[in-house]
Image 1 (cartoon, rainbow, N blue to C red):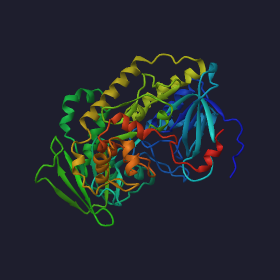
Image 2 (image 1 turned 90 degrees about the vertical axis):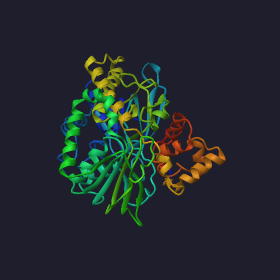
Image 3 (image 1 turned 45 degrees about the vertical axis):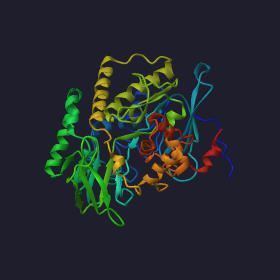
Image 4 (image 1 turned 180 degrees about the horizontal axis):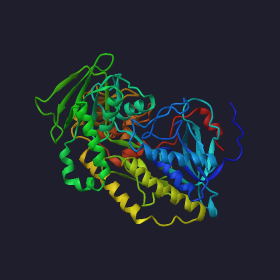
Length: 485
């Protein structure tokens, strides 16, 4: 196997990673400043997770029935497609960025960014193995945060977002009758999508008490569109008679070869199971679990961006009002700066894309409009209220059996993790990984990292930073190393 001669890597004013809500908004804002833009996305078509839709290559026209904000997507997509057609945007679909680094030779002798590319799926090399950019905008999004539950390794158990993505992309369901459980408003659209697609929802189990919104009602009032969206879901639940059970968790998922039933219970504010509240829901062939979201931080952490632990317990990056990270020339938005939904992501990325484009072209970003700053404050205030009202429930660790699998890739149990902590001083995620192999499998700790960090009892920021620090950000063919300059 020999390296290909690729010539000089193409250079752009702005490179954007991700073509979801934030990436599309950033691309439109950057080309409006006259910047030459590259957009790299792991999916085969724009839209991201939020606007994931049926295959355009198969000639399927999506009517947006499973989406919110579909009109906004169509507008952003039209501007994006126009930029691609005019040559202002170079679009690299089905392509992963497996390494990002700063190199010399930027404007005025400063740094610029090198992105190393590989196919998002399968073997071979990317058509363009590497690109360069003066400014880098990361909009990589996030994925469902998971907590282990006895029986969650049975076939039929999925992330709540995985069920929704399956419906949006395929127009069909991975089962017939579901229980959706976890915490947060995201459980509502997942259940709504299931009944829209012709399935049944036996129950939605919300671990939090909705009373948590009472002291934060003013935050919700500042974003009235969210109230209207919530009213739509309430009507869907009433019309389809979907039970919505607050302060309720799944304590065990039951079945032989696949999911057949779930055992649920009400929990106290301290996380303990309320005696006599357990019940079994039979006739279930699908379970969706979601406990908030985990930002995809591999690339900003590779570049040395400053991080912090957000109010929901996830690791996020520090940015200013323009989306600038602590690394010069690096801009971030969306889940990378704190999970807040598509509206916040689009707003943040418009500002970041405009600022990055203006800096690359003219050297000055210009001011952020006061109206944009107020909108940012309202959206971020709502997001903070949402996280505080729907926290990861207390006591989830106490409901694990010793045999409960925590790391499904390497089949590491809760008992093995706790034994390593007690007997071998494995008091952080990195040590647990070295001793038990938790996080060494295909997902590299993306699914189990949060749970292993909690079970190790270590410092949250340090432990989660270790999980996000990956010299190789994504799985890639070995031949990609041969394309490195």
